Length: 295
Image (cartoon, rainbow, N blue to C red; front, side, top):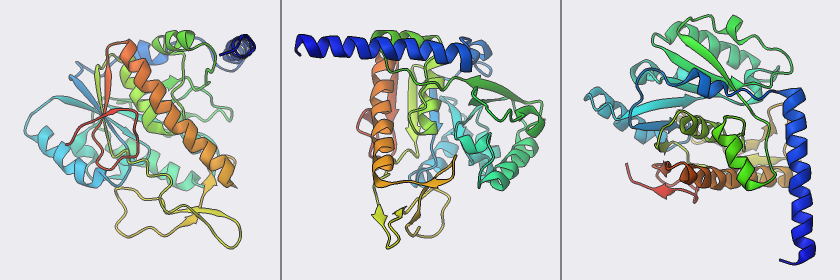
């Protein structure tokens, strides 16, 4: 690296660092809400983070079978619409993450989101920490939507830091960094690390985000989006950003996917600095950042 490149990198990092602290001071704050809330009861040795990818269809029954046999080796963290699964009450996840803007901002999915909150109010019969974005520009009232007293609402920060790497990991340790690289499971893994778990397992995190990607005759980017709860083969459909509701371009989508996979590398490296490990247990997953184990 030349002297010019080193200077350029230093100045960019300096700018990004100053920008981050300015935004945090005015937009969010410097409180570690996740650390303050702590764990739900005595933690198990492992945290299992459940994505909604197709692989979870085979993995979930095995996880439930182990739990019902009394092998309390895992705590569970679920995401997004998992509460609508009939097995939600059997798994009883102590942790739940909602990070997509559609969960706190008006969007085309508002009716489905409202139905999810009603379901969680009715079905949660055990203590559960629900993690939501601190940034809430429309002042959505989570407590009004989720009146169940067993659900503890815990904010997490989402402002991305892109400055000096050494400082980035110090911010992570204090709950001030953001793992909001593009998917909720990354937030879940980061929260597990903040809670002190030394082994985090990923299930249903296929990340086959380029599979079935195409452009239709109207120049709309389309993709077959598949989940573990789908009973039929998904056909390619136009894909839209959630908030604001506008179509992806090929460039914007690929940039977002690249950032998502970079985020997994950041989480892997951060976990190593605190003596923890993230293990990918999802069969056929496209993530190449973590160690793989068959389940």
